[in-house]
Length: 503
Image (cartoon, rainbow, N blue to C red; front, top):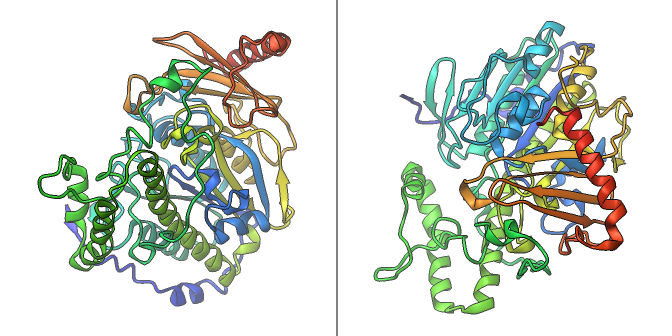
């Protein structure tokens, strides 16, 4: 592996800003697709939950459109990425869970855009086990990638870049835009590792939320009554499964029973340079000392775990928002903002203490729903808010139609710009047995109701009235007053399974 001591990309923002001032805008719009990993919609301030501020991501909605009901098809990293690339559900693109390898020979979005004159690039988290195909340029993290000093692979091999990974991805995105063939439109995928577990903030954001007291969700101590085995048997509880050391950065003391540094954590610290390590220890070691001195017990301890989790999770997102701002500023400085669609989303949602959980996987709202904000002046009216039911399945058809490319019949989504509306959306999760022990399930969601079938080692159904029960605490599948609704939903579910060829 070739090592580069400093991630000197040879470009300052000032140089970047000057380089493209005279370029001629292509007639077809450019498309920048920014996708983060595990970014909960609750942690995008445009959605109004009040946990943090993401002004740059919010700008996309203010200057374009915010979708309030966008959903993933399978709340897991690799499957979600495969859906975006292919415009097909997991059972058809061949990647159902994180153990599968993506078949790069199949037709994908960049391959469909290239005949229309687009130059294409992929930078950041890939996580599909095989190398990217169909891109003019790609540079990807190895597997999940670390938060500091990442190794990245491209067509020339593996190289190390020194710095904070989110910033490095932003640097490289700007460098590629600046050096591209300016006579052609471009399609660029910018994929962040952040805010994936285990949430290592950039040094400038150490302690950024330490004085913010986050509200505890009303169902943080959920006992999962009136719900089935899936909710009861998961292993994603903040209270039971979130670790003090790996997740919450509390150093073990000599003689304590607290588990010491595991291999992954130890490698993260060894990867840091002396300056990074010094800053890290200057903040986190005193934090651990204060924890031990407090001697928290019971509910006080459980609430502290949630607070500590959110401090780092949201701190990591601050850097993501910074990089979105850099890209937006670059486009404006170079006269590209009027003819470039910029999209921000996440591969899946994430639990931030709701039901007592972290992680994703479930078809419940916090995991199933994803943020989606995008702008394109002249095509999307500024300040638009959509309540339509849309999915990440729709990204590929949207970009193809925008580029003037005929959308193949094999793609299963719809263009978000077509005006077509759905009655319901479909979901299917497969990774069980697996990490976090979330059982296999599939289901549908309408504008008011959600029907879920858990299967494999169980056979259980859940039905939620989202108007009366938006937090999904009361399963009404056996409630006689919902008999007619249940039968209608069962019929709609079978219709979608047939439509999407999910047998």
